Length: 508
Ligand SMILES: [Zn+2]
Image (tube, rainbow, N blue to C red):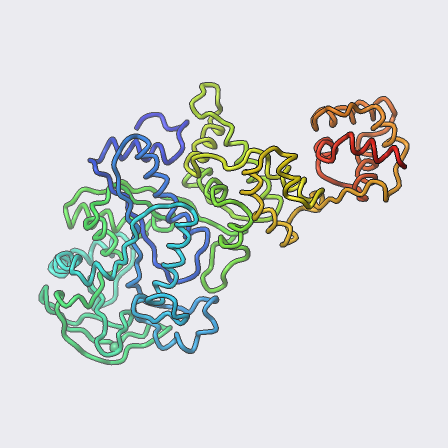
């Protein structure tokens, strides 16, 4: 590998793919959609997409398949579906794609959350081909692998046990039959097989549900089975001809499924291995996401507060293996918006650009093609608070289109009461007491200076008049806004207009 220090992770992974694999490249990713979306879900879609973009930027052709693993057993009713509990509980243990969606919106329970994920990819402009894996099983695309594993059952079992560090129970099988009587997949076990035909019994107790006791016989060619996870994962990489696929750090720990995947591919299937990569945990306020508990402010809420490209930027900027902790307080979100706006100004190809700034610029480029506004988000919010008039805001910022783009987000900040106190400002000069210092300051201020100059002038004025800048700022805020704190004073004064303040002071 070449020098990677200056590269964003998507770049060095793309380079590695080009170096080691043959075109057309295939990126795969997948997840089980069994509960509401969270930031982790978004990353499952976003990270591979970033690699795709990096490959395409290098003129390479590549495919990105996202596998919806909805044949997995439905094992718990998520908190958000609590009201459908009675309806859903009888279906526990069935493949997610065979559990009805209680809301009636989607084809199945697994599809319910998959469809939400689909919507999410649209909002975030992530393009991928979503594969419902049950269709691949129904079409028999897994059959030759299922037969292969049944034939090599003992070897497969040994590899699974060695790599996971766990003894499998007696009766372990490479496949999980779907019970013909009760439709459950979690409760069955194979009792006999000849590589094509298998006998099974539905008698397992998996705590959240129990088997029905049925005994049956089926054939692989009936497509009423799923391969167990640790063999299913390497199999899909063969089916899709994966060049690169990542997984969370939990799959990459000792005993995790990554080790099994590699050993099965190399030692049992005798195939080439794809390029694996691993990423850190996506935490929410320091904690791992929990399906049963849900979280605080989710993706669907944060996307109302800032454009999706900023959320993408926030998730793509950190190093790949770093844990990302989402903590959407108003201060942190505003800082992220400013960080994004700053990143849009960086040219990653300039020689003097620092390593971290280069990564910011690349993360920006992966998030969007261009920034849709010129005035800063905070300025737009400030003008809106001072004037409550969007036309005036557009006029003052000189960014009509940008203001129109940001308008719904800022309105949401206001409606939610999410703007920090200092930005909730109303111009009230004339109704409030004004100190002599403030009057004197505006007498000496030129009308045509910008915010930064005003800021410096306030410091100069304080020094000359023996008052601490802190006290001076306080007096300004009290005169203009009727409170002790506010947005940066220079910016505030420029936003209101020095001429206007002078005029209003003159009448006092
Ligand atoms: Zn059964």
